[in-house]
Length: 200
Image (tube, rainbow, N blue to C red; front, side, top):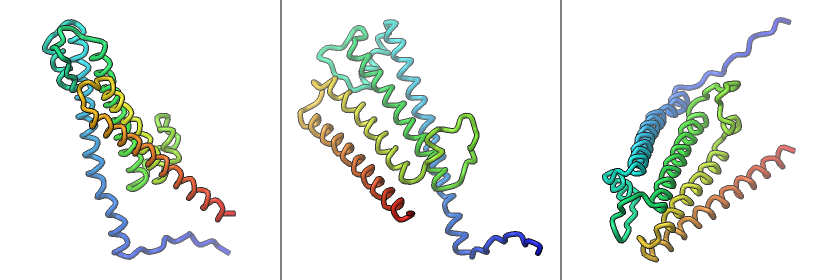
């Protein structure tokens, strides 16, 4: 008996339109790419200011102090260890936010818009091979906790510039992020365990 080729089921106009609406997210991801470009520019501006301040440039040092929000009792005349630490933490913060943007852009596009067909590509991110909406939520939660940790560390290094209310509020927000991420991870674990039990 000759085998007939498998036929693709016909899809109605409305389901096809609804499914195609996922491409409306494409401009959003393009916008995030532009935001990434701005972050890269901001990173290099701060890095150039840091190098110039290390070489003795007072305008660069003043720009650094203003950008990081550090308010010493006296205007610094040279680059101090505290200022260097705050600038480096600010640069790390930019990198972590950029990583978060890449995770949202690549993971979100792969999960909700279209496949990128990166299987076998030498530069394929390790996490992308098993990414889905649940994994993406957990990874985003962990990334946000990391960013919040950097902000909290920056605040405590220059604690004299903030009121006790601000310090307590930032600590409470960070703890809230931690608890939220733990709740998301626990919920995903329960759902994963339930789906596995149903499969047996």
